[in-house]
Length: 358
Image (cartoon, rainbow, N blue to C red; front, side, top):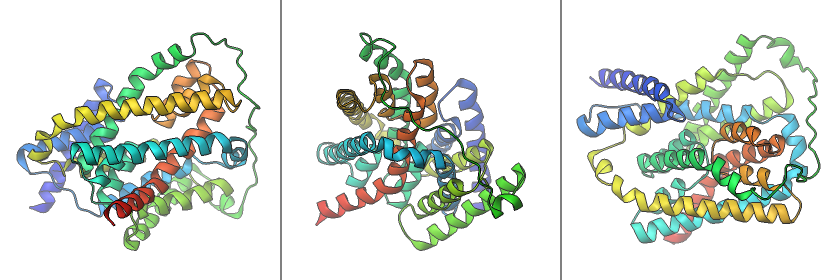
């Protein structure tokens, strides 16, 4: 009977993905599957997904984050270290402040409040929430609303903030965007797209299993991220098509959706206040970072606004390109912001919870 539950859950998740993609919902594989499975779970209790699926999803998610890091990005980090430290500091303070407020004012458990405000990927943070015994469905909903709000209002916000700034604003020194090719022994053996895909997938799944067995919070994601990033920096042997990422997102959405209960649905109205507060605080962070970065000559205003926006890295790059911002600098800051959110913020959240409960 358990196998039937799992199969039905997967079918519902896949249907949810296709419907979400058809109507244009952001991150349809994650959000569509989560909503579809969540509705079935809340009203029937039939949805079910085995826990080890979490390790698979985290392993693949970590691999995709790792694939976003290249030798070029690492080479450019010293040039972007000041704005990166500033951004991470502001985001960390913002997350801790909001998490404590949600805990004290709205009665959320502290870990759920903290993870709801982490500026990471929806799937990544939701899976981490399951590892840390937070309310994964609440975290996923908050993360989804954050992304949707940013995508809806960011272009207008940037246009408003830069209305009196000319196109020739100085964005500081240009980054080194040259690509270097130094084939390794691994590259000579894994020399076709198919081999690279299989190799990367095997590495991701092994790392996911090792991380899961280690018992370290978010261990599957972190282990995969570190290993694949290292391989991607020093070799050209890693590659994974978006289809695999969508499969991982559907699995992640199924996991989160299957945790939804009637009580979860009844508490949805309590999310409105936290969402408004969260987005207002993110606007403050965005404004503060942009003003400081502009005044100190680290970035131009447009690039600073996009670099500190808590949206998806790829989404920010697409919008920023249309509005004439410095894509290279935005990409470096957004990539390392996602890495920080996925790999280090969970450890910060654990530390805060331990300190508050001591």
